[in-house]
Length: 457
Ligand SMILES: Cc1cc2nc3c(=O)[nH]c(=O)nc-3n(C[C@H](O)[C@H](O)[C@H](O)COP(=O)(O)OP(=O)(O)OC[C@H]3O[C@@H](n4cnc5c(N)ncnc54)[C@H](O)[C@@H]3O)c2cc1C
Image (cartoon, helix red, strand yellow):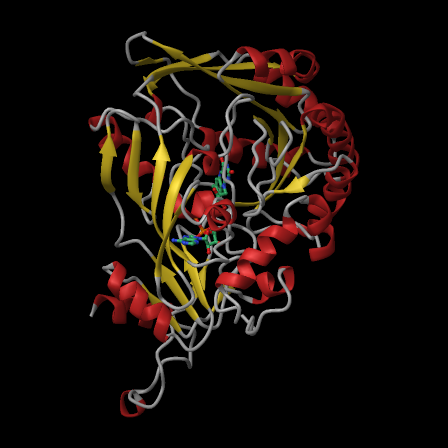
């Protein structure tokens, strides 16, 4: 009943059948992602309650099947006119091993829901991204990352996983069993099947001290490399048209839980938007006003259990482009980005985010074989992001960046193939497990040509 009501409220006019014709016309529920950069009208949206139900569904679906997590990807990974499957009912901790500190979790678990049960089991995630709304499967499918020069992306935490393949069969894989499938599945874009469970290598619970310090941009740049090596987790932001930014560093501590007063990040972004509205024609005045204000902002220190001390709330919606650059290219690229933003894009007000991620060996990981500096640019979700991102993307590309799989970019299949040494290995495994392209929407069919389907989204 509730589903029907929601469908009725969300469906575009003319889509729902009139009472007399209800049996003849299918009722479709539109889908859109967090930022509204992606939408589709799939034939079906389903949330199986059991793995058996999921298997039956995949085996019986007539068109393309795409898994969705929390819908927090900006890129066109999910849209399909076929079936969208959510694992929201397959969520939570399945089991844990106190010796190895490994835990098995349902793939549909939201990051924000697993910190407490893991802590009760004597474990914690090694690292987390800057929000905790995403699902585990969604995160590993796009190589979601936090920051930490010596810490890999979330896919590096996986020790084994289970998925439902194109025939509806349940397949387990890890370093020993089906190792090629495992290598591909650690970052898979949802193109191999529907992941049901993940086994993660965790660590013992830990407490983090997080310190946020406002600084002049030049001072941040002079110290960033050093700070990235000195702190367990280090990132920084540059606020365009201010000459100022802030550093955010996390380190393990046994201090008691505590917090200084905190600036509300969402309000802060709204204030930057207001400054843009009033002062965008006077960049020097804008810098004077913003810079002077930011110099008065106090440092913030929060001590909390790790899983409560990584994520922030992001209530002001945006679209985002993030590229992962060889670490040594990060600062030179950032200098160029600042120049382009401040000479060509007075409309921009979101801070630019810079993070560090360790190299790994995963075939489709943007961090494959290189330590990385990740740079992200944002545009308010109601504004057209294309002109800004089009100005910045050539800089990312010039510095050999690889795009975040879940974020906006305009790279073509040939560009991506050149960037990934193991691209063909992934494509071969993909063809083998899904020869008919049952998991390929149009975007993915473009990336991995040669399989069937990939119909219009
Ligand atoms: C506000 C915001 C903040 C963000 N912060 C960060 C950050 O700090 N670091 C970072 O790296 N990224 C960040 N992201 C990006 C985000 O983490 C990724 O795009 C992530 O993939 C989203 O997870 P999701 O659960 O929403 O998955 P979705 O976006 O719904 O799906 C992503 C991919 O996962 C696949 N998938 C989902 N579930 C399954 C399954 N069960 N089996 C197989 N495939 C599946 C989908 O098919 C799709 O290809 C942020 C995004 C937003 C909107």
